[in-house]
Length: 130
Image (cartoon, rainbow, N blue to C red; front, side, top):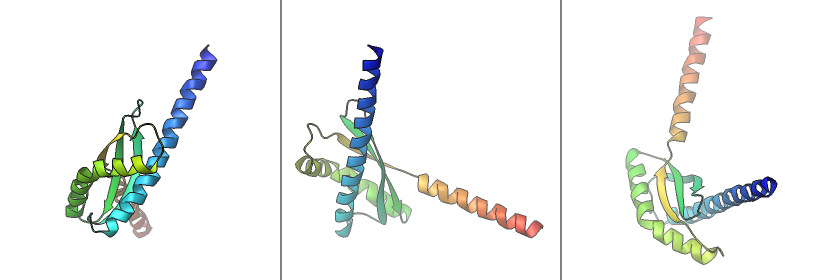
């Protein structure tokens, strides 16, 4: 029986990952269309989707290339549009259940940029020290 349990667990993990990828692609497509209408500030990218184990909830992580005001405007717009996005996906995807979406800002690109800047400073210091 343990082999069967492991197979079921692996199937569920794989299914969640496939659904996360599907939602990531679909939401990015929707966001791109909505951005053309000026609904968001700055350039918006959906960076990740994380589904709960019961598939009822999904956290959608986004980044914004723009000012802090653009980020706030985008967060507000996504919060207002989350039900509309869910309804749109419900109509496009033939799934038994579409999760409830929450949107969270992903500051990973900003952190990566700061780390890159630090590396550049270190590299310049090494060159000047030689």
